[in-house]
Image 1 (cartoon, rainbow, N blue to C red):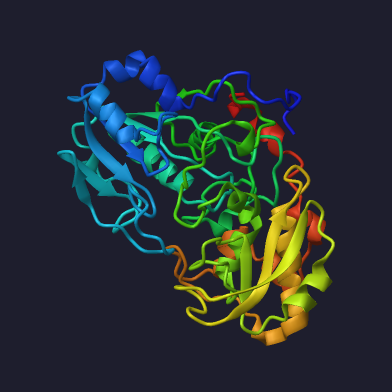
Image 2 (cartoon, rainbow, N blue to C red):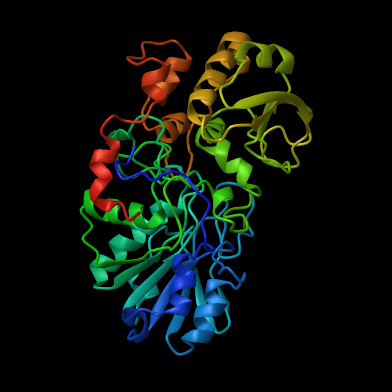
Length: 397
Protein backbone atom coordinates (compact mmCIF):
# COMPACT_ATOMS: atom_id res chain seq x y z
CA UNK A 1 0.00 0.00 0.00
CA UNK A 2 1.31 3.51 -0.75
CA UNK A 3 3.04 4.96 2.28
CA UNK A 4 1.36 8.34 1.92
CA UNK A 5 -2.19 6.98 2.10
CA UNK A 6 -4.66 9.39 3.66
CA UNK A 7 -7.71 8.43 5.73
CA UNK A 8 -10.76 8.03 3.54
CA UNK A 9 -13.07 10.99 3.27
CA UNK A 10 -15.57 12.30 0.79
CA UNK A 11 -14.32 15.32 -1.19
CA UNK A 12 -15.31 18.73 0.08
CA UNK A 13 -15.31 19.83 -3.56
CA UNK A 14 -16.40 18.02 -6.71
CA UNK A 15 -13.91 15.85 -8.53
CA UNK A 16 -12.20 17.58 -11.45
CA UNK A 17 -10.69 15.20 -14.01
CA UNK A 18 -7.82 16.13 -16.27
CA UNK A 19 -10.36 17.07 -18.93
CA UNK A 20 -12.17 19.41 -16.53
CA UNK A 21 -8.84 21.04 -15.68
CA UNK A 22 -7.76 21.69 -19.28
CA UNK A 23 -11.15 23.17 -20.11
CA UNK A 24 -10.86 25.55 -17.15
CA UNK A 25 -7.16 26.26 -17.33
CA UNK A 26 -5.70 25.18 -20.70
CA UNK A 27 -2.03 24.22 -20.29
CA UNK A 28 0.45 26.29 -22.25
CA UNK A 29 1.57 23.18 -24.16
CA UNK A 30 -1.98 22.63 -25.41
CA UNK A 31 -2.51 26.27 -26.29
CA UNK A 32 0.72 26.35 -28.28
CA UNK A 33 0.05 23.15 -30.21
CA UNK A 34 -0.22 23.67 -33.98
CA UNK A 35 -2.28 20.52 -34.43
CA UNK A 36 -3.16 17.85 -31.90
CA UNK A 37 -5.03 14.56 -31.90
CA UNK A 38 -7.33 13.08 -29.26
CA UNK A 39 -7.67 9.44 -28.15
CA UNK A 40 -11.02 9.07 -26.37
CA UNK A 41 -14.31 7.19 -26.22
CA UNK A 42 -17.87 7.64 -24.94
CA UNK A 43 -16.79 7.96 -21.29
CA UNK A 44 -14.46 10.88 -22.10
CA UNK A 45 -16.84 13.51 -20.78
CA UNK A 46 -16.50 16.58 -18.57
CA UNK A 47 -18.35 17.01 -15.30
CA UNK A 48 -20.98 18.80 -17.42
CA UNK A 49 -21.30 15.67 -19.62
CA UNK A 50 -19.72 17.33 -22.64
CA UNK A 51 -17.64 14.93 -24.71
CA UNK A 52 -13.93 15.69 -24.92
CA UNK A 53 -14.00 15.76 -28.74
CA UNK A 54 -16.71 18.41 -28.76
CA UNK A 55 -15.33 20.44 -25.87
CA UNK A 56 -11.76 20.55 -27.19
CA UNK A 57 -12.90 21.15 -30.78
CA UNK A 58 -14.88 24.18 -29.67
CA UNK A 59 -12.10 25.47 -27.42
CA UNK A 60 -9.34 24.80 -29.98
CA UNK A 61 -11.24 24.71 -33.32
CA UNK A 62 -8.21 25.06 -35.56
CA UNK A 63 -5.94 22.84 -33.52
CA UNK A 64 -7.82 19.58 -32.85
CA UNK A 65 -7.62 17.84 -36.20
CA UNK A 66 -7.62 14.09 -35.61
CA UNK A 67 -9.53 11.64 -33.40
CA UNK A 68 -8.56 8.12 -32.34
CA UNK A 69 -10.74 5.42 -30.79
CA UNK A 70 -9.75 2.33 -28.72
CA UNK A 71 -11.45 -1.08 -28.54
CA UNK A 72 -15.25 -0.82 -28.97
CA UNK A 73 -14.79 2.38 -31.00
CA UNK A 74 -14.90 6.12 -30.38
CA UNK A 75 -18.57 5.87 -29.36
CA UNK A 76 -18.39 2.33 -27.87
CA UNK A 77 -20.70 1.00 -30.56
CA UNK A 78 -19.09 -2.44 -30.97
CA UNK A 79 -20.52 -4.25 -27.97
CA UNK A 80 -19.06 -7.72 -28.26
CA UNK A 81 -15.46 -8.60 -27.52
CA UNK A 82 -12.84 -8.82 -30.30
CA UNK A 83 -14.90 -6.94 -32.90
CA UNK A 84 -12.84 -4.46 -34.88
CA UNK A 85 -14.00 -0.90 -35.59
CA UNK A 86 -13.81 0.90 -38.92
CA UNK A 87 -12.20 4.29 -39.49
CA UNK A 88 -14.66 7.18 -39.84
CA UNK A 89 -15.03 10.95 -39.53
CA UNK A 90 -16.63 13.36 -37.06
CA UNK A 91 -17.18 17.10 -37.38
CA UNK A 92 -14.81 17.23 -40.36
CA UNK A 93 -12.12 15.45 -38.31
CA UNK A 94 -10.64 12.10 -39.27
CA UNK A 95 -11.40 9.27 -36.83
CA UNK A 96 -8.84 6.47 -36.79
CA UNK A 97 -9.64 3.17 -35.10
CA UNK A 98 -6.84 1.68 -33.00
CA UNK A 99 -8.72 -1.59 -32.79
CA UNK A 100 -8.63 -2.41 -36.46
CA UNK A 101 -5.93 -3.60 -38.84
CA UNK A 102 -3.56 -1.82 -36.43
CA UNK A 103 -3.41 -1.29 -32.66
CA UNK A 104 -0.69 1.37 -33.02
CA UNK A 105 -1.07 4.71 -34.81
CA UNK A 106 0.74 4.66 -38.12
CA UNK A 107 3.01 7.52 -39.24
CA UNK A 108 0.29 8.49 -41.71
CA UNK A 109 -2.29 8.78 -38.91
CA UNK A 110 0.04 11.00 -36.89
CA UNK A 111 1.15 13.15 -39.80
CA UNK A 112 1.01 16.87 -39.03
CA UNK A 113 0.44 16.44 -35.28
CA UNK A 114 2.78 17.82 -32.63
CA UNK A 115 0.75 16.55 -29.64
CA UNK A 116 -1.56 13.63 -28.84
CA UNK A 117 -4.06 14.12 -26.01
CA UNK A 118 -5.35 10.96 -24.29
CA UNK A 119 -8.57 10.97 -22.27
CA UNK A 120 -9.66 7.43 -21.43
CA UNK A 121 -11.38 5.97 -18.38
CA UNK A 122 -9.48 2.90 -17.16
CA UNK A 123 -11.06 0.39 -14.74
CA UNK A 124 -8.02 -0.61 -12.70
CA UNK A 125 -7.42 -4.01 -14.32
CA UNK A 126 -4.36 -5.07 -16.31
CA UNK A 127 -6.26 -6.76 -19.13
CA UNK A 128 -8.41 -3.73 -19.96
CA UNK A 129 -6.99 -2.91 -23.38
CA UNK A 130 -7.14 0.89 -23.22
CA UNK A 131 -3.89 1.12 -21.26
CA UNK A 132 -2.11 -0.98 -23.88
CA UNK A 133 -3.53 1.15 -26.67
CA UNK A 134 -2.01 4.06 -24.73
CA UNK A 135 1.39 2.36 -24.63
CA UNK A 136 1.27 1.78 -28.39
CA UNK A 137 0.51 5.49 -28.80
CA UNK A 138 3.47 6.38 -26.59
CA UNK A 139 5.73 4.23 -28.76
CA UNK A 140 4.43 5.66 -32.02
CA UNK A 141 4.63 9.23 -30.77
CA UNK A 142 8.13 8.73 -29.39
CA UNK A 143 9.27 7.48 -32.80
CA UNK A 144 7.64 10.47 -34.52
CA UNK A 145 8.87 13.09 -32.04
CA UNK A 146 5.31 13.87 -30.89
CA UNK A 147 4.51 14.67 -27.27
CA UNK A 148 1.66 12.97 -25.38
CA UNK A 149 -0.62 14.59 -22.81
CA UNK A 150 -2.71 12.27 -20.62
CA UNK A 151 -5.77 13.77 -18.95
CA UNK A 152 -5.99 11.79 -15.73
CA UNK A 153 -9.11 10.09 -14.40
CA UNK A 154 -9.86 8.10 -11.21
CA UNK A 155 -9.18 4.44 -10.77
CA UNK A 156 -12.74 3.26 -9.94
CA UNK A 157 -11.28 0.67 -7.53
CA UNK A 158 -9.22 3.23 -5.65
CA UNK A 159 -5.46 3.46 -5.41
CA UNK A 160 -4.52 1.40 -2.37
CA UNK A 161 -5.05 -2.27 -3.27
CA UNK A 162 -3.45 -4.53 -5.87
CA UNK A 163 -4.36 -8.15 -6.64
CA UNK A 164 -2.74 -10.97 -8.54
CA UNK A 165 0.78 -12.01 -9.43
CA UNK A 166 2.82 -9.97 -11.88
CA UNK A 167 2.57 -10.65 -15.59
CA UNK A 168 5.33 -13.01 -16.73
CA UNK A 169 6.89 -11.21 -19.70
CA UNK A 170 6.88 -14.46 -21.70
CA UNK A 171 3.10 -14.00 -21.82
CA UNK A 172 3.00 -10.45 -23.16
CA UNK A 173 0.01 -9.67 -25.38
CA UNK A 174 -2.54 -6.96 -26.09
CA UNK A 175 -4.05 -7.70 -22.66
CA UNK A 176 -0.73 -7.23 -20.88
CA UNK A 177 2.56 -5.71 -22.03
CA UNK A 178 4.26 -4.78 -18.74
CA UNK A 179 5.04 -6.61 -15.50
CA UNK A 180 2.10 -5.44 -13.40
CA UNK A 181 -0.53 -7.27 -11.28
CA UNK A 182 -4.10 -7.85 -12.45
CA UNK A 183 -5.60 -5.17 -10.20
CA UNK A 184 -2.93 -2.48 -10.22
CA UNK A 185 -4.24 0.41 -8.09
CA UNK A 186 -2.93 3.13 -10.44
CA UNK A 187 -4.63 5.90 -12.39
CA UNK A 188 -4.19 5.96 -16.17
CA UNK A 189 -1.77 8.86 -15.78
CA UNK A 190 0.32 6.89 -13.32
CA UNK A 191 0.22 3.86 -15.61
CA UNK A 192 1.41 6.01 -18.51
CA UNK A 193 4.39 7.18 -16.46
CA UNK A 194 5.21 3.66 -15.26
CA UNK A 195 4.94 2.01 -18.68
CA UNK A 196 6.83 4.81 -20.41
CA UNK A 197 9.66 4.00 -18.01
CA UNK A 198 9.64 0.20 -17.66
CA UNK A 199 9.00 -0.44 -21.36
CA UNK A 200 11.83 1.93 -22.23
CA UNK A 201 9.60 4.04 -24.49
CA UNK A 202 11.01 7.46 -23.63
CA UNK A 203 8.08 9.50 -24.94
CA UNK A 204 7.88 13.16 -23.85
CA UNK A 205 4.90 12.80 -21.54
CA UNK A 206 2.68 15.34 -19.79
CA UNK A 207 0.06 14.38 -17.19
CA UNK A 208 -2.79 16.73 -16.28
CA UNK A 209 -3.61 15.71 -12.71
CA UNK A 210 -7.07 15.53 -11.18
CA UNK A 211 -8.19 17.65 -8.28
CA UNK A 212 -10.07 16.45 -5.20
CA UNK A 213 -9.16 12.77 -5.61
CA UNK A 214 -7.54 10.65 -2.94
CA UNK A 215 -6.13 7.14 -3.28
CA UNK A 216 -8.63 5.82 -0.74
CA UNK A 217 -11.61 6.77 -2.93
CA UNK A 218 -13.71 4.25 -4.78
CA UNK A 219 -15.76 5.61 -7.67
CA UNK A 220 -18.80 6.08 -5.44
CA UNK A 221 -16.76 8.38 -3.19
CA UNK A 222 -16.00 10.83 -6.00
CA UNK A 223 -19.61 12.06 -6.52
CA UNK A 224 -19.03 11.68 -10.29
CA UNK A 225 -21.68 10.03 -12.46
CA UNK A 226 -20.82 6.66 -13.99
CA UNK A 227 -20.55 6.74 -17.79
CA UNK A 228 -19.80 3.21 -19.06
CA UNK A 229 -16.17 3.10 -20.23
CA UNK A 230 -17.04 0.10 -22.40
CA UNK A 231 -20.35 -1.52 -23.34
CA UNK A 232 -20.02 -4.47 -20.96
CA UNK A 233 -19.36 -2.41 -17.84
CA UNK A 234 -22.67 -0.51 -17.72
CA UNK A 235 -22.57 -0.24 -13.91
CA UNK A 236 -19.82 0.72 -11.51
CA UNK A 237 -20.59 -2.51 -9.62
CA UNK A 238 -19.25 -4.42 -12.60
CA UNK A 239 -15.78 -2.97 -12.07
CA UNK A 240 -15.70 -4.39 -8.53
CA UNK A 241 -15.84 -7.95 -9.87
CA UNK A 242 -14.09 -7.40 -13.20
CA UNK A 243 -10.47 -8.07 -12.10
CA UNK A 244 -11.46 -11.65 -11.40
CA UNK A 245 -14.51 -12.36 -13.53
CA UNK A 246 -12.79 -11.26 -16.73
CA UNK A 247 -10.89 -14.57 -16.49
CA UNK A 248 -14.09 -16.34 -17.52
CA UNK A 249 -13.43 -15.02 -21.04
CA UNK A 250 -10.78 -17.75 -21.21
CA UNK A 251 -13.32 -20.50 -20.47
CA UNK A 252 -16.56 -21.97 -21.79
CA UNK A 253 -18.51 -20.34 -18.93
CA UNK A 254 -20.55 -17.27 -19.82
CA UNK A 255 -19.26 -14.13 -18.11
CA UNK A 256 -22.70 -12.60 -18.64
CA UNK A 257 -22.01 -10.93 -21.99
CA UNK A 258 -25.32 -10.64 -23.75
CA UNK A 259 -27.12 -9.79 -20.50
CA UNK A 260 -27.71 -6.47 -18.74
CA UNK A 261 -25.20 -7.21 -15.96
CA UNK A 262 -22.10 -8.78 -17.53
CA UNK A 263 -19.32 -9.93 -15.18
CA UNK A 264 -21.62 -9.49 -12.18
CA UNK A 265 -23.28 -12.78 -13.12
CA UNK A 266 -21.91 -15.91 -14.75
CA UNK A 267 -23.14 -19.36 -15.67
CA UNK A 268 -23.48 -22.28 -18.08
CA UNK A 269 -26.24 -24.80 -18.87
CA UNK A 270 -24.49 -27.59 -16.97
CA UNK A 271 -23.88 -25.74 -13.69
CA UNK A 272 -25.90 -26.62 -10.58
CA UNK A 273 -26.12 -23.12 -9.14
CA UNK A 274 -26.99 -24.12 -5.58
CA UNK A 275 -24.23 -26.71 -5.50
CA UNK A 276 -21.65 -24.16 -6.68
CA UNK A 277 -22.89 -21.47 -4.31
CA UNK A 278 -22.67 -23.82 -1.35
CA UNK A 279 -19.15 -24.86 -2.32
CA UNK A 280 -17.99 -21.23 -2.46
CA UNK A 281 -19.83 -19.57 0.42
CA UNK A 282 -19.19 -17.64 2.55
CA UNK A 283 -17.32 -14.91 0.62
CA UNK A 284 -15.56 -12.03 2.35
CA UNK A 285 -17.28 -8.83 1.29
CA UNK A 286 -19.83 -10.40 -1.06
CA UNK A 287 -22.92 -12.59 -1.24
CA UNK A 288 -23.65 -15.06 -4.03
CA UNK A 289 -27.19 -15.36 -5.42
CA UNK A 290 -28.35 -18.15 -7.72
CA UNK A 291 -29.53 -16.96 -11.15
CA UNK A 292 -30.74 -18.25 -14.49
CA UNK A 293 -30.24 -16.20 -17.66
CA UNK A 294 -30.14 -16.48 -21.46
CA UNK A 295 -27.39 -14.49 -23.21
CA UNK A 296 -28.51 -12.67 -26.35
CA UNK A 297 -25.05 -13.06 -27.92
CA UNK A 298 -21.66 -14.68 -27.33
CA UNK A 299 -21.24 -17.91 -25.32
CA UNK A 300 -24.39 -20.01 -24.84
CA UNK A 301 -26.41 -17.56 -26.94
CA UNK A 302 -30.17 -18.01 -26.34
CA UNK A 303 -29.53 -21.01 -24.10
CA UNK A 304 -30.57 -21.13 -20.47
CA UNK A 305 -27.56 -20.74 -18.18
CA UNK A 306 -27.53 -21.45 -14.46
CA UNK A 307 -25.04 -19.68 -12.28
CA UNK A 308 -24.39 -17.02 -9.69
CA UNK A 309 -24.68 -13.27 -9.29
CA UNK A 310 -21.92 -11.66 -7.20
CA UNK A 311 -23.35 -8.96 -4.92
CA UNK A 312 -20.46 -6.97 -3.44
CA UNK A 313 -21.55 -5.85 0.03
CA UNK A 314 -18.20 -4.55 1.33
CA UNK A 315 -16.12 -3.20 -1.58
CA UNK A 316 -13.07 -2.43 0.56
CA UNK A 317 -12.97 -6.00 1.84
CA UNK A 318 -13.90 -7.87 -1.34
CA UNK A 319 -11.15 -9.39 -3.50
CA UNK A 320 -12.46 -10.33 -6.91
CA UNK A 321 -9.38 -12.11 -8.24
CA UNK A 322 -9.20 -14.41 -5.21
CA UNK A 323 -12.89 -15.29 -5.61
CA UNK A 324 -12.63 -16.08 -9.31
CA UNK A 325 -9.66 -18.39 -8.79
CA UNK A 326 -11.81 -20.27 -6.28
CA UNK A 327 -14.70 -20.34 -8.77
CA UNK A 328 -12.48 -21.81 -11.49
CA UNK A 329 -11.10 -24.46 -9.14
CA UNK A 330 -14.59 -25.49 -7.99
CA UNK A 331 -15.91 -25.62 -11.56
CA UNK A 332 -13.18 -28.11 -12.42
CA UNK A 333 -13.77 -30.17 -9.25
CA UNK A 334 -17.54 -30.27 -9.61
CA UNK A 335 -18.01 -30.56 -13.37
CA UNK A 336 -14.83 -32.13 -14.71
CA UNK A 337 -14.46 -31.90 -18.48
CA UNK A 338 -17.76 -30.03 -18.86
CA UNK A 339 -15.73 -27.04 -17.75
CA UNK A 340 -13.09 -26.17 -20.34
CA UNK A 341 -10.47 -23.58 -21.13
CA UNK A 342 -10.86 -21.87 -24.49
CA UNK A 343 -8.10 -22.44 -27.06
CA UNK A 344 -6.44 -19.56 -28.93
CA UNK A 345 -6.70 -17.23 -30.74
CA UNK A 346 -7.68 -14.48 -28.30
CA UNK A 347 -7.02 -10.73 -28.59
CA UNK A 348 -4.59 -11.13 -31.51
CA UNK A 349 -2.60 -13.86 -29.73
CA UNK A 350 -2.57 -16.95 -32.01
CA UNK A 351 -0.71 -19.53 -29.92
CA UNK A 352 -0.81 -18.89 -26.16
CA UNK A 353 -3.85 -20.06 -24.20
CA UNK A 354 -6.33 -17.23 -23.51
CA UNK A 355 -6.35 -18.07 -19.80
CA UNK A 356 -2.57 -17.76 -19.72
CA UNK A 357 -2.39 -14.32 -21.29
CA UNK A 358 -5.26 -13.15 -19.09
CA UNK A 359 -3.59 -14.30 -15.88
CA UNK A 360 -0.08 -13.54 -17.11
CA UNK A 361 1.35 -17.06 -16.86
CA UNK A 362 0.33 -20.72 -17.05
CA UNK A 363 0.24 -21.07 -13.26
CA UNK A 364 -3.46 -20.30 -12.73
CA UNK A 365 -4.51 -22.79 -15.39
CA UNK A 366 -2.30 -25.44 -13.79
CA UNK A 367 -3.62 -24.50 -10.33
CA UNK A 368 -7.21 -25.00 -11.53
CA UNK A 369 -6.34 -28.36 -13.06
CA UNK A 370 -4.21 -29.35 -10.02
CA UNK A 371 -1.40 -29.96 -12.45
CA UNK A 372 1.93 -29.07 -10.87
CA UNK A 373 1.40 -25.40 -10.08
CA UNK A 374 4.22 -24.00 -7.94
CA UNK A 375 1.95 -21.57 -6.04
CA UNK A 376 -1.13 -21.75 -3.85
CA UNK A 377 -4.31 -19.68 -4.00
CA UNK A 378 -3.02 -16.88 -1.80
CA UNK A 379 0.27 -16.60 -3.69
CA UNK A 380 -1.56 -16.38 -6.99
CA UNK A 381 -4.12 -13.82 -5.83
CA UNK A 382 -2.18 -11.56 -3.44
CA UNK A 383 -0.48 -8.37 -4.59
CA UNK A 384 3.25 -8.61 -5.35
CA UNK A 385 5.16 -7.73 -2.20
CA UNK A 386 7.26 -5.05 -3.91
CA UNK A 387 4.59 -3.55 -6.18
CA UNK A 388 4.16 -0.22 -4.40
CA UNK A 389 7.90 0.16 -4.03
CA UNK A 390 8.36 -0.33 -7.77
CA UNK A 391 5.77 2.31 -8.72
CA UNK A 392 6.50 4.83 -5.97
CA UNK A 393 8.14 7.27 -8.37
CA UNK A 394 5.12 7.24 -10.68
CA UNK A 395 2.44 8.00 -8.08
CA UNK A 396 0.75 11.39 -8.52
CA UNK A 397 -1.56 11.42 -5.47
